Length: 163
Ligand code: FES
Image 1 (cartoon, rainbow, N blue to C red):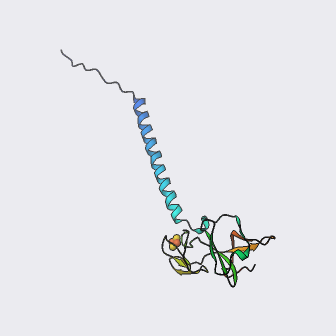
Image 2 (cartoon, rainbow, N blue to C red; image 1 turned 45 degrees about the horizontal axis):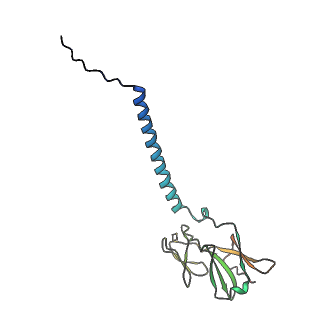
Image 3 (spheres, rainbow, N blue to C red; image 1 turned 120 degrees about the vertical axis):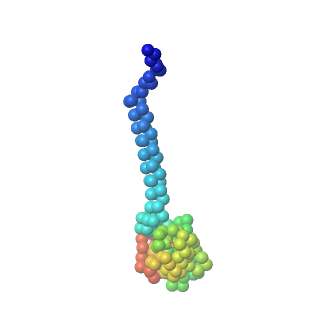
């Protein structure tokens, strides 16, 4: 009798299982990494203004006479605008009250390039989707007479500072 004698393949079950586990683990980690990256991007886009606060710094701006009425100056990389008027000074946050984009100053007012909201110089929302006005920030003077703005301290709209 002639028996066909091919050599049996020896499979090490523990080795095959190890490869499978490794592949399963790496694909799971890759999936988690993808989801967390996409989730972080979505959260950054959707989180409202309060989660993207201005810094808590106080910015010293110099002497008030350096800002005659009619002056409109961007501060803190465009996140704050100081305006000088006949009624006094005021500073508005340039963070859009819709979803927190930084506004672009125009000759009059501010525009949001994210979704098109428009605010006048006093920060009132003139065109949506933003509904709330821009925050007015506290201004003051140091003992040496230099003007400052408290970047994270809001005051009521219409609170002009007279130096
Ligand atoms: S973030 Fe949507 S209009 Fe400004």
